[in-house]
Image (cartoon, rainbow, N blue to C red; front, side, top):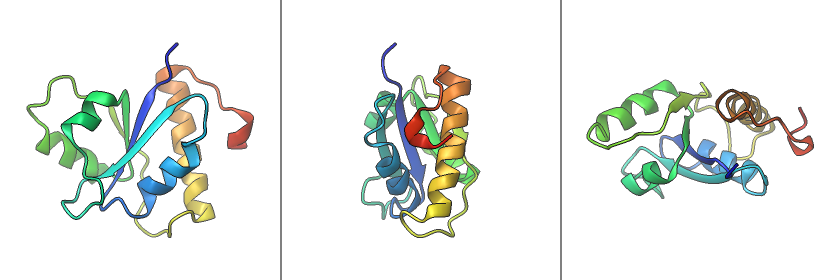
Length: 122
């Protein structure tokens, strides 16, 4: 099986999605990108990101709605799921990392049948 491509998305691409990208960057099971929905993002989600992704993990449900609205004419949008992680954590915060791992590992198993590895501490 090819490695699934995961796209993490938050608001301004400053705290949550860059943390998720850092956590999974060296995970041999997946390929990772991150982006934000805001025009003020360092990397704003694009058609190219959507074409690349097999699964989009948004930090809050409102970002799913924003992607669906902005890219409503995009053919073949990948599945979009919310990790339901509020914007109340600093970058690389231990609690944020724990929430990212919990949600991402659940979806890796549910969507791709990928078991957690030892590095994720599950």
